[in-house]
Amino acid sequence: MAADTKNPENANDIVKSKNFIYEIIDEDLKTKKWDVNICTRFPPEPNGYLHIGHAKSICLNSGIARDYSGKFNLRFDDTNPEKEEQEYVDSIIEDVKWLGGNFEDRILYASDYFDKMYTWAIDLIKKGKAYVCDLNADEIRETRGTLTEPGKPSPYRNRSVEENLSLFEKMRNGEFPDGSKTLRAKIDMASPNFNLRDPIMYRILHDEHHRQGNKWCIYPTYDWAHGLEDSIENVTHSICTLEFENHRPLYDWFLNELGIFHPQQIEFARLNLTYTVMSKRKLLQLVKENYVDGWDDPRMPTVSGFRRRGYTPEAIRNFAEIIGVAKRDALTDIALLEYAIRDDLNKHAQRVMAVLHPLKVTITNYNGEEVLDAVNNPEDAGMGSRKVPFSNEIFIEQSDFIENPPKGYHRLIPGGEVRLRYAYIIKCEEVIKNEKGEVVELRCTYDKETKSGSGTSTKKVKGTIHWVSAKQALNIEVRLYDRLFTVEAPDAGKEKNFLDFLNPGSCEIIPNALVEPFIKGSKPGARFQFERHGYFCVDTKYTTSEKLVFNRTVTLKDSWGKTK
Ligand code: ATP
Ligand code: MG
Image 1 (cartoon, rainbow, N blue to C red):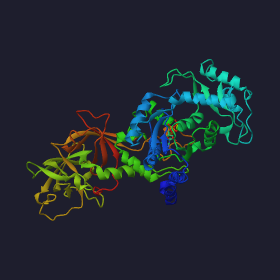
Image 2 (image 1 turned 60 degrees about the vertical axis):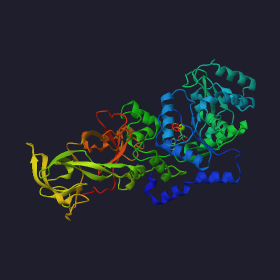
Image 3 (image 1 turned 45 degrees about the vertical axis):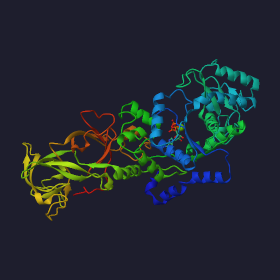
Image 4 (image 1 turned 180 degrees about the vertical axis):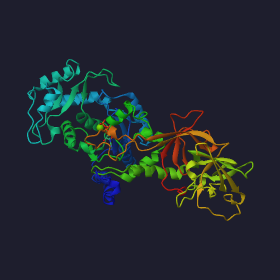
């Protein structure tokens, strides 16, 4: 699969098709198709945390409701008691809210409709359109037929309405063991569409439901339940991913047979991202087998992971806008998501100086201390400036000094000069080494006339580096994240498992970095740009009152710091 975003031709296609759902809705409004307000929904199954693909669906559905002054429902598709948990329900509500999906007070549950669905099933039985079948799951699969051969009708297909009603009631009352019977729609065993070959509507499952307890021991299948849920809520446009295209005839069949409010199902291409797995099963495996540190590990493609990493909801919504809505599957370059967050943080993040790998510098001809003015955000004058302490003992980045520089290196070298950001030009006079020959300190002199903003000197140097004053600097922990996988499509390996492509260097922890005192007392979640290093935010999990822990949200692309 080619990355669509790298191909201008396809990118154009995305932009054009971005509006195909809007075009459908516009047409519906013109023809007055609906006598209710536009209504969309986001229908997660509470069996995992939401990921960036879900975020796309939330932005799309809630965006439509917003743009057409309609409604957007959050509805839990909690029809399978086996894998569903309250923890997931809670996290999903938090994530949808955080993304700005405005469901008002409508947190709905498919399980609240079970009674209604049961009554409708009885209606279909009475119409002769549904029957109780005694074949087990394997037998049903074996009699489904193939692409070229029709399926074999179940021997129970022609049970009388009375018998079906009685058996179905007994199913509901718990008189049969799991898997011994199903309720099936009576449609067409010869249909070219497999989904119409007498699909299962109910299966027996004696399992406790996270909301219904032991009230039910029969549970509806997705195909049977989903259209009914949409219909009950007067959803006008039921937007789902492409794999449900072949299910649409069944969706329509149930609603037509019941003669109830009939939403329109529309399919769009799911989001796939490079260097990312998006299947809930695989994400669960990463969590359960401790390859990552929980669902909200900052390397996870989950909404909670991105939040912890420092992403803003605005950036994710912008990303959803940029990628648009397509009708065929593609692979989106993760660089586009990184672009979206960088763009947002560039406009809003407070700048500070942080030194990740400190090298001590003593300024031998400087006495005392002073505070210097530093700009908080060059993109936004309204953010003002701050005071940065300066003294004769500072730290610079180890990589900003080199003894034997390659050609074109503009930072500090023995006998060379460099500008300290917001401060003075310094000159390296002496290099101190330990017994192993490693550079441990630089002795420098400063030129008083070169003070940033107010100096009288016209001296110019090519390099500018960042620094922190030793006495006032705060000690922090910094976590640098890289992609969780080493290949663009970790899912695509034929022989290899996605776990084989895990990036062993996806999290580098720097336990003792130094940052200017401005950030003291920052709240978990606060976002900063560490000049020349990237955007960082205060971690919500590991930060303590003693020590701030910072996650790198994203690197910088262009910056003044591209000093050679
Ligand atoms: P599964 O059904 O295997 O548990 P799922 O990812 O489909 O996984 P759901 O909870 O059913 O999870 O998804 C809720 C909604 O999110 C559905 O409407 C689905 O179409 C949409 N969705 C899921 N994955 C993506 C994706 N990658 N891109 C866009 N929409 C998605
Ligand atoms: Mg699903």
